[in-house]
Length: 331
Image 1 (spheres, rainbow, N blue to C red):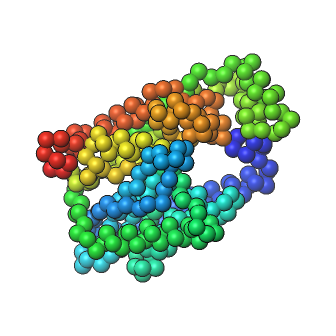
Image 2 (cartoon, rainbow, N blue to C red; image 1 turned 90 degrees about the horizontal axis):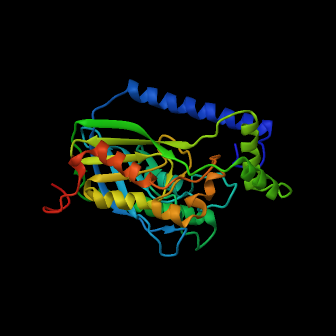
Image 3 (cartoon, rainbow, N blue to C red; image 1 turned 135 degrees about the horizontal axis):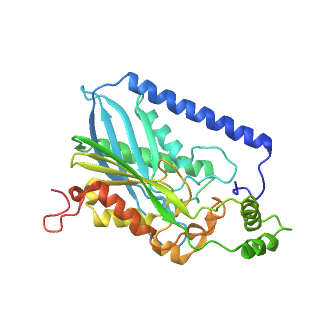
């Protein structure tokens, strides 16, 4: 609603709605095709690393270079699929360029190296991490990053993988993250007037909310965030957090849980907005609250969201995946 600083033209809305329908239809089709053709398989995984993510808020700031890889083979040992994630935005290319960026090039690199294999690439907690962009034209740099991922995956496949055992247990819940106190009507009016002549984001955002108040609508005061986990017995837990999650969450969870058996993803199930840690929320800036304007929320988050999310992850994973300080990281 407030992403582009002005109302979307009807033609653009129609394009978005058509794309949305087509995407949902294709996702449904591929899911149904998979359900109709189940085949037994062996699952195994490994963790490597990549090197091109950089903290975009602070030079030398925290990043997560882990590269977890899930490998699917048939009962004869033939490779069927590879799934991986890396905590970095797909923003090597400039604005208004349509491309899979480093993730698309990584998929292409893997599938070229292993014909017939399906590769899937997702993004971890990389909301405050961007790829290194220097060294050539952006599309060439993105291709270099993708080939780096492909080479790291190939190297992992030459090593001994850790087999996954069941039973598979899946949990899903929604955590309500409360917003800070909302602006008063007088504050909305001040913001609307401040850049009314410049067509700025803040002014448009304020005018949209004033229109809602004029219609008697209640403004939203909390953000529902999906949290999902897959547990493969005691061998691996994959965490799927909704939203654009900053790197602090992955680093903290892998510190408090058994990092050798936990894999953290974000951008999963829904992306309502950026999800800052308490540190990033205090620091402010784009990920710390400024981006809420573009995501059509009335205020930044209230402090306390980080512990809520961490508590939910720990609840879903139970003590089975806690750290073992006396006997090492893995039982």
